[in-house]
Image (cartoon, rainbow, N blue to C red; front, side, top):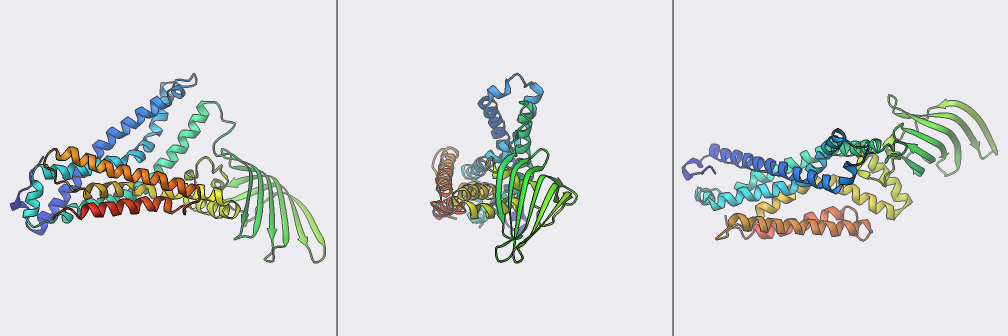
Amino acid sequence: MKKIHVMHISGRGHVRLLDKYTVISVIKIGLVTLSLCTLMMLLVELFANFQTYTESYMNFKRASYLLILRIPYAISLTIGPAFLFATTFFISSIYSNNEMIALLSAGIPYYRVVTPICLFSIVASLFMFFFNEYVYIPSNVRYNTTLDIYKNSDNTYEGDNSNIFYVDRENNYIVKIDRYVDRRQELAGVDIIFKNEDGSVSECITARLAKWIVSQKTWELQNVKKYDIDEDNFYILTSEEDTLIDSRFSREPDFFKDIRSDIQTMSIPNAIDYLRTIRNLSVTRYNELATDFYERVLSCFTIFVMMLVSISINLRFKKNVLLFSIIASLSLGVIYYVTQLVTLLLAKQGMIAPLLGMVIPFIVITVVAFISASSIRS
């Protein structure tokens, strides 16, 4: 590895050069490790679902396409441990090569050496958030849909749902839907009850079918019966229409998907609206879905946590610096994942708030990391 000598580190420009060298080194090691981990995860995926990939409806082209669709999943799962190893390897290397002694002798404290790594971990975490939203989630949905098509089971999809009921408190109405067909974005058997501010019924609409109009972002109700109710005069006005568009009923199709399969496939605004509705209907169901949602949103910060673990390890081992540093980092990483597993389970059971299911592991590993880092002498 390239040596860093005392004479080349003095001055602001050379410190910037050190920052660049640190970040580039971590990125290079991290990308190589990530590639190997991704390949290993794809092999695990292949052998774990070997029967699926060898069924009669499969061939080499189809199996290869499905494996390609699983690459974002593998990246999302392994990028945290990959950069944990990359950071640990880099820091332990400059320790074992006595480069850290040169840096400290030049007046550069340890925290200044690892500052660019911390900044990079934050940027990488934000990148992973957008990667998960715009690459991983669409590829996962595409994988499930494609697999269903290959199985010739296109009569039902994971997105299909039935017996849907929810209350829209903003527009003050209740809706019941017999069935939602995801591939056609259609609703069958729609009943909508609009209420006045005092809770009395003002209007009822029934429709045999509703189709989503993408250009207008609303539903077109078909074969409609409309009932205008005047409770004061005990009067009901009935009318029939072939089609009807009511701007008050404009929930996007993702809202009606079978959320039991995976709330992480919905857009974030729709997921938030759905959680608000579920919270008023079932607290137990809300705890499960809200925990899954917070796990989706906050899981991107796993990179930050793993790299924080790496830079907090006291690497002043006399022998086998790389080996012992990796063991120490992995030990803290295991503590994080085990704590997260327990807290997520408690959150889904309603014993703690759903948000705490992801926050508590962050807090625990951050405290442990700072305690460990406090023993490092600059």
